[in-house]
Length: 201
Image 1 (spheres, rainbow, N blue to C red):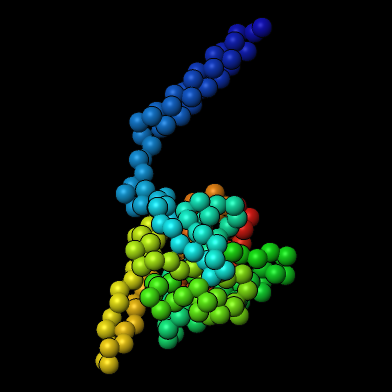
Image 2 (cartoon, helix red, strand yellow; image 1 turned 135 degrees about the vertical axis):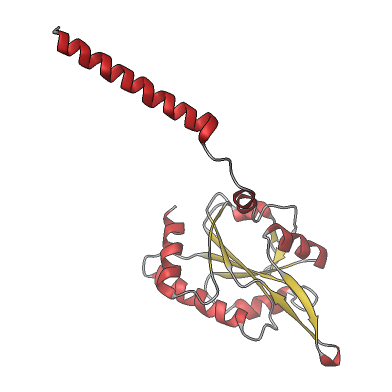
């Protein structure tokens, strides 16, 4: 073996050591720790809530697993956001159906006092792949907190009320982990880009 060959081997060996050392340093010292925001996102949907679907099946954190899932909060007396979102979901499902796919979508009520299983089931029946979910008010409150959603009852004249609530659609992968979100009235093609990445994950 020539002197040049030995020198090349030494250089490559030292380079490998340097690269390995740099990788170890990054993994153990320099790699940024998860931020509070990242940790909060990882915990989305995780909690001890016990709800029920419109067809009478129990729904808990464990039921987020098994397939990609979209989750949004609303109520059947909602004047605009919820019907619009259901329309958007229908358009997503039509696109996915062309590839033989369907996105499981969960509509969790923020108005369990009025939204019974029967009412919820009828309300979402026209939107493909959408399941209505309700439960005892205390359990719904737990779910709202677990998904970091927002819901606030607002009194109206005559003793009636409405509910201000979150507008985003939250996306979860088949392990039940938060994947991303679709904003209210987000352009269709941009939303479909996120949803297709979810379905392929």
